[in-house]
Image (cartoon, rainbow, N blue to C red; front, side, top):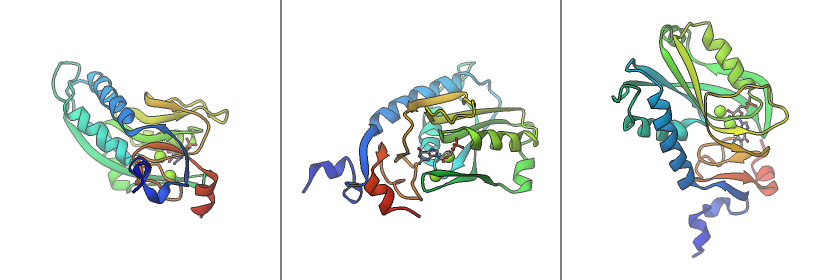
Length: 203
Ligand code: 5GP
Ligand code: MG
Ligand code: MG
C-alpha cells in the first residue's frame, strides 16, 4: 500500500496541491487559542455559536480545549453550545448573498447573552459583517468572533475577527471541515485545492 495515503486520503490524492497547515499544528494552535479566549472572560455563561458547516471541526476542538482552560478568575467557564448555518459560496466564489438560517425565536433568545461566534475562515469579511449586523439587532450583551483562518486578500472589506488561528495566502483552501461544494470536509489537514480537484468537484 501507499504510505502517503495516510497523510492525504487516497480518494483525494490528485485533488490537493499542497498541505498548508498539518493537523497537528492546527491542534496546537487551537489549544493555545482556547487558553487565550477563556482567560478573557469572567464567570458569566457564554454562548459558543458554531457557524456551520465549515466551522464545525474548529468549534468542536476549540470547545474541548476551552473546557480545560481557566477564565479571568482562574475558574472554569460555563458554556452553552449553539449552531447557526450561514451559506454564501458556490464553487470557489462568493455568491454575494448571505443566507442565515436561525429561527426568529432562536435569534430572540440571544438577547443579553455573551456570544462567541466560531467561524472557519474570513476571506472578504462580508459574510461575518452581515452576520454581525443581523445578530446585533437581537441585542446580545457581547459578541466576539474566533476564526481559525484569516485570508490575506486585497478584496478584504476591512473586517478583522477578535481571535485568529492562522493567516493564509489568497488561495482557495480545503480540509479540516472547510469544503469545496461540500467535498474535502473529511480531510485532516488544511490544503490548497488543485486544478484537478476544482474541475472534478465543480458544481
Ligand atoms: P467571506 O464572506 O469572508 O468572503 O467568506 C466567508 C465564507 O466563505 C467563509 O466562512 C467560508 O465558508 C467561505 N470561504 C471563503 N474562503 C474560503 C476558502 O478559501 N475555502 C473554503 N473552503 N471556504 C472559503
Ligand atoms: Mg464559514
Ligand atoms: Mg463552504
